[in-house]
Length: 175
Image (tube, rainbow, N blue to C red; front, side, top):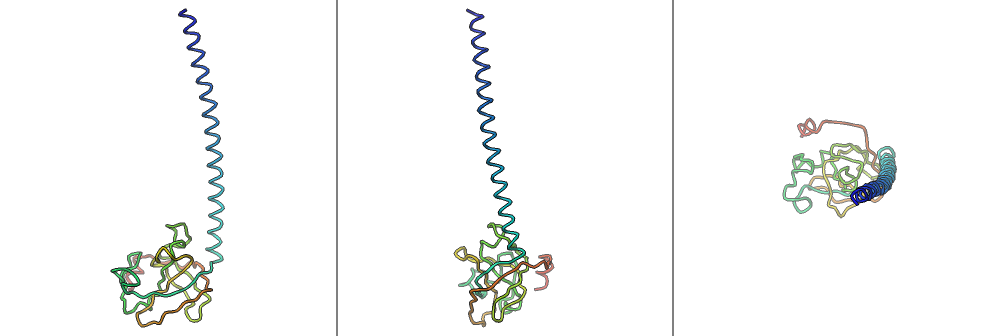
């Protein structure tokens, strides 16, 4: 009886180990397929984002002023920490972008990036990303303007990322 018990226990152990190996291999294979699929999707998304960096994208352009009812309780401090002179806001050539355009929310722009704006009557030019818009806006930029500037809106403008660079600390020292 003792030999029979040992034999049955050994057989059960071998069968359980074999079954566990088959199940584990199947699970690992499924996970590997899932990982491979996610890596392919990631590469596709990278390619799509790269198109925006080289070809640009269409946006709606509006403006905002450094006043608390349009920003927050500190209208002289932008989202990236830059401090501005509110009376000279138009001189800075800074923009706020909708969150979907910022890298931290899956976009292709980051604070400090320079963009070329085209397709406006009088606001075409190079601007620097320094601020973020309210989450309700999508594919939109706001140009920082002084308090005396009349509101405007351009529905069919285009932005393209430029390869101009500056260090944030030296740029902040200019203002």
